[in-house]
Length: 115
Image (tube, rainbow, N blue to C red; front, side, top):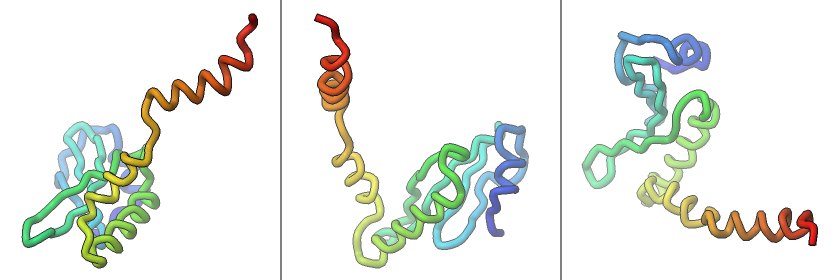
C-alpha cells in the first residue's frame, strides 16, 4: 500500500488502531504508534541481516523529503556502502555547540556589545 500525505495527515496525532507498520516503496515505511506518532524508516538487508534505519518523524520530515532520503540511501546501498554511514557523515560534518557559541559571540555579541 502506497503512503500518501493525505493519509498521514488524517492519522497524525489521533488514536490509531490500524497496522503498526505501513510500507511504501524502495524500502521506505512508516511506523505508527497507538497515539498517532508517525516515524519514517528505511528497511534494508545488510550482509543477510535485516536493518531498520529511522529517518525522522512526521510532520517535521515530509513524505517528499523522506522519499528523497530513501533514494539517497538506496544509491549508497547499491554502491556497496552501508546506508548507516549516510547519517554518520552528517554528524561528523555538523558544528559542535562550542563552535556555534564561538560563531555567535564573534558575529553578534562582539559587534553589539557596548564598551
